Length: 184
Image (tube, rainbow, N blue to C red):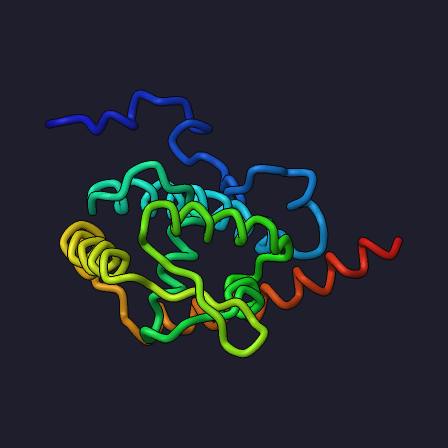
């Protein structure tokens, strides 16, 4: 009769204790809402992986040496094909430091992916034809490498949409907590 490999293990190794939530900071998970620490660790992993993806995806699309913020700004400016005000780009991307977006815009202008203009007294930024082509190449690569793989997981699109909605709601709580912490 064949023996199971676990038969020769001590009893405590056969039935390991539950590990609890997977977190990066156990001291934070020991509070009233351990699941929030688990969410934060997932957010850390996803955000770094997303940043790597954006940079490498855009490089594969023929535009190397962009930072994650540069890629986000380019896609934001390309959104709906309308010129954007710098303040609107910062608002949509939730970037507090306007100079970071200003630097990205200047870099994208040097690469001829966006161009500055004016609407009344306000400076605007619009995508150039080359910038639009770069976004379309990125989209094609994204569809082939990322969307296809994620669809293969069988996620319900409604559940994924609900997760995104919950993340946007949580971002408001983090923003409020940051304001409160700044006043301490």
